[in-house]
Length: 311
Image 1 (cartoon, rainbow, N blue to C red):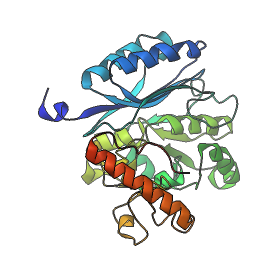
Image 2 (cartoon, helix red, strand yellow):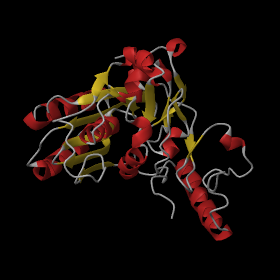
Image 3 (cartoon, one colour):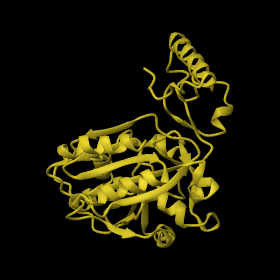
């Protein structure tokens, strides 16, 4: 094991669409397995499969992947590995859900019909075709940090909004190639399944998502612009899956670029340009007190206390 591995945590973003009739029974033993090995993060279980991101030692994560692969319904996981210099999660959660990625449309099954997978090394050619409409299936706050050159932002606040956006733009999109992408591949896989069910034929998606693209495609050949938002305390990653410069506003949870943090409205743990006008002085006083407690806890070494969302 090299020095970098000794001083960092392995992060695994994973998912698998598969029929899992007994998913409720998997929750308790999976939670115990992770807790015993010091793994933290979130795993979602549903009748349609598993989804989540977790972090731990290299050995612990290897054990977890082997454990999940030993479950017949979950074998064949899509996994992206990266590293974090510090533990990027505060606790371990294994949750039962109706969907592993919530679209809210019944009958959409990526195991039956899905768009054409495109390898990261072939993605540039597809999205450079003038007949291709490149669609970012993530939410606006994620897209604010970075996206592919020329990509369409559906301006969704939730993945539940995506079907309505596609229907609203049907006439403009119906004769185009649709190239969809997301962070790790799961949302765009379900989005293409929906598009196929809705009658769109030329539908493609980036295999392994942005994370796999940033891992496989060198920066000098990349059509990616900015950083990629991730759902952990790293906040963002960039080419080579190195940690980015973005930070979260602890008041509104909006990811902030380095430039946004130069705003006079940015106060660590209290406010940012996105929420300053929407919050009251009383709110900011409460956040300021919370930030003081965070800083005291860090000095004492008793934990960062930054996992809770602001009201």
